[in-house]
Image (cartoon, rainbow, N blue to C red; front, side, top):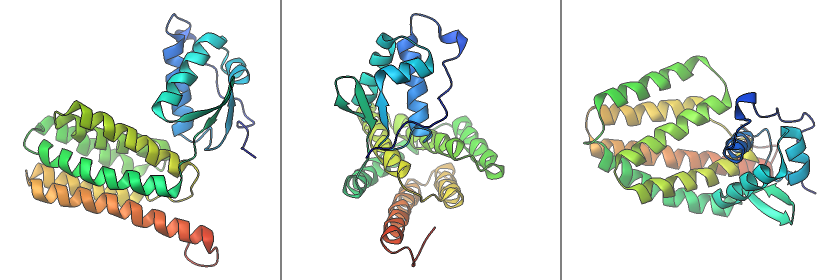
Length: 233
């Protein structure tokens, strides 16, 4: 049985969103609720009830839900109901293999192109995370970090594909307990160090190590679920 929506209703859209672009704002709001895990993997998302909770009409809500299906965050279960998609372990690891190929190429290409000011901004954002434990803030920085190098590579199709692969990875994490904020920050720092030195080979190697560490961590978490008495995070 699919988990229901959280018992605490999602907050309504802010007053500033009572405009003609309610569909866009509903989409952004729901996307954040899913990616922040406030609406968990496998949760049913009934169109009518969610429209009432967010205090919007059904038309912009339907537009938002259809867009979320297109982005791969939701799947349709009936004419007026949706569900947050659950990503299998197999799909996650296939996605990560693709990310290895794409993101290593992206950062190798981006190293000679990225500006010093942008690198300084990335560094400041990373250091600001050290005092915080907010999961969503870490993920938002992580998303910005990876998407940034994909965009700087200059290949729009590559950047779009990486974005979609990251959604798949995030959905897998939604229904899993593993997380490694400190390790991820350290790995991001190693990537940044290499890019600041303009060492494309080292940046590529650091990115590959980062992505493979994520996969190793997922394997340990999966093994822990199968054997609760053994390794756990």
